[in-house]
Image (tube, rainbow, N blue to C red; front, side):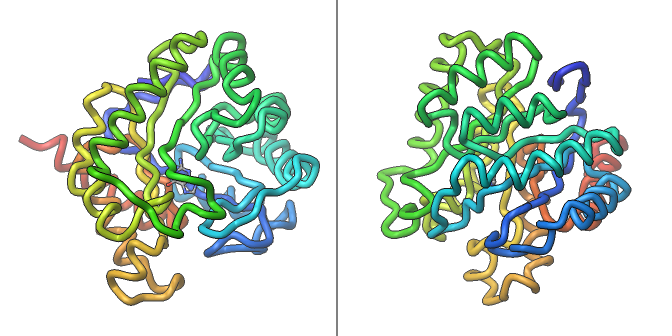
Length: 279
Ligand SMILES: Cn1cnc2c(O)nc(N)nc21
């Protein structure tokens, strides 16, 4: 179970997080949802198809992406969050690393911080802790080696699973020491964030180990290169890979599946829920 402001989600099975990139350059849908009305329509579609969360991001974190200035990121996400919060009873997560964006996004309706940099930018931990304490807003902390600009140049691990586990032990302690309640933390191994193909599939194969913290674990592999490079499929034709990889992650204990194709993965969740309900 996890609280998101005054809402509670019981993770009696995996839940789906729909991706809503309001950026011109995101790797798979860049520019499609920059217009607020298009973003609203996409959010409506994802909520109707059964998404529990809508993840809104104003800065692409694809490999090679450069950072966006805070005002530009705010201009992209705030109108969309306001519009979606006014229209839908969904849990909005803000995909950002910037403290100011965290503050303003949660002021207009976001109830989960999704930070691919695990609250490591200056000021991010303080702001996220304040939001956890004062508004009961949790944070998802993701593992990344390097930065989006450089992370895929030459990822290196002795043992990727052990190193990501160690990262979480340290980072969870840091957040709790800062003032987070333990149960206000979600973790995410960060598929594709400073990982080569083998690293990504080792993380997926050993995904169950990330449930050792007894915290919700997010899996996000949707349309990523770990699927495209293995199956030799371009970004528009990776649905079979999306279904397969997120099914595996769900069976290995993932609580949140962060995807573009909500309908397909909600179908996966319905089948898994059925399996869990029969003797
Ligand atoms: C923003 N973003 C892109 N990929 C992601 C992933 O795998 N996890 C999380 N938490 N956020 C992501």
